[in-house]
Image (cartoon, rainbow, N blue to C red):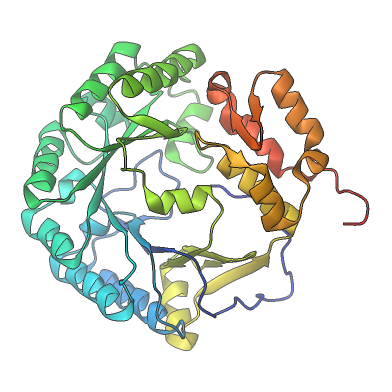
Length: 407
């Protein structure tokens, strides 16, 4: 998951992560390889096509699962990266077969694989379909060549069309398209064309993200050095709000700030994140969480490989989250969803009296028209959507929470 809070940490070594069953319903596998490293991307990925490195990482990912000491029983699987379909076909098949062999999939409800258009081939997609993948998530980003070049995307318009057609021909029942708006110089009509083109392929899910200039990326450096203009805030807000209106009019429900789905097509894996659930992350840089314990694997491939070989445990750090920190995260994440959060459920889960602890912040939000409190449910107003990312971060700040006496 991108960008988390800064919880209490153990400074003396790595806190032991609990290895009992109970990581929750979500299994994430991180495949860090891409054909290029896009200028805006701050996810852990490397532009590397060396077959030996790929072979070693796939083997280490499967060894990490073997070393858990139990057989995972996921309700959802998400293979992300990076680009899992950048793997050679034989390694992709080995990874999928390893999941089938090492996990109990009797309760599996959803298996997603991320892909980029240039790496979608009929044989690779068939490998995924045969393994049980039922949901493909394609990093289209735009259908305009100039924007694809600006984003350093390695595919073109025809490759996107072909990949979408192949996914349909292979028979995946669920299809998500990732799209990006807020490109410097992009006008409203260019973005509207992207949305219309996307709907022409009849996906049942769309993820529409505003371009972010993450520190450490080439795009952030270019903006800082004024080699590219900053996006116009007014245009970005207009694109965001018009997206929600247009997709809603076409029966895509905005169930989360950046995610839109036909009825019954929510991404169950990501819903578990937004509800602050437990999850098991496998692979370089992947994180896992179980009831307040959170650990993160080594990102550097040599460190990840050596730790797997030496101990089977690739964790670089582990941390224990206080109940207040967990509650703040649950509010921060849960309020991104259109349905909001149940205050009674959060109080029962964390033992934190929400209105007493966060009362001032909630009252400020209600007075500003950003938060709506209807009986037990707290949710964002439609007017708050353009400022939601910055506003919701306030729930992560200890200064915004007052700890009641005696707790």
